[in-house]
Length: 401
Image (cartoon, rainbow, N blue to C red; front, side, top):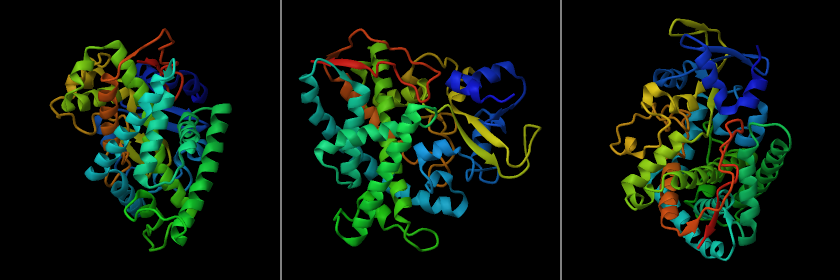
């Protein structure tokens, strides 16, 4: 039976529910009329991220490309083209120096925002974190944005993420946001190349604008715009984790004191990424006829890797529904075990190149939340699993003192 409607209604619970109803190493189903097979587990992560087994080109549904990733971006490439483009984004977003600089810009933007929050009765942390993150990442990437333009840009970047897995108004808002922001950034790339928009030579914007792809040619301006958004959008998506971090501190306030310790802040960040739902699964296509644990998978089959299920698997974590950052204190969790942003090797594979930056930003944000004086008014703190991507319904309303 086709499971498209079931996925839309059940959200994150859809695949875990299928695993509970099946025996064997895979789940067979159909999505949008296509044959699909779901995999799960540490070895499945390694199998899925082997390019001999799975390709990405043509695997992503058009609604996801048109909202979340953009046409021509690194997520839809394979082989040498993917490695070449991934090296560009790793150089921009994943160097230790770059991650540290981004965290510093975030800290500066946070401190600039706090006085304004104190002047309001309440703030919605999800929205305000989006603004802070937008201000930080545009400064860091060298994208010129005037002060009054930061909030509308933040709203558009959040909309691209919020609308990728749904139909209706949220989806069309996401499409509109991407179309308009790609056009703006393509014009900005063209201005950089003409010399009419001077930006620092080592900035992310300049590096992407002047990048030459595997064939030696500059990226088309619209493709370069997609890759600039691949730096901005995932950074601003940390707003979801900001709401989750505040939710965790509200439920388990004993962590507030401990977040002054940097090691605990990073452990807290990893537990937030594991415990709370972000990506339910990732998708690819079988590059050839495959066999997984004795099960035949025909070439072209849509393959789903269950991320949410693995991050809540009792066989992997022991107590998956206990929020326990200390499980990450000793740094012995393998990268293919914790997979909130995918698995594999970030430098050569399809693992998110911004994962280190995400961890640093959540750690910095959690530490600052712990040091901020605020109360949590009565509100709806439920996290609906049928909503992808989900967050606390209220967005985490805070009264900052």
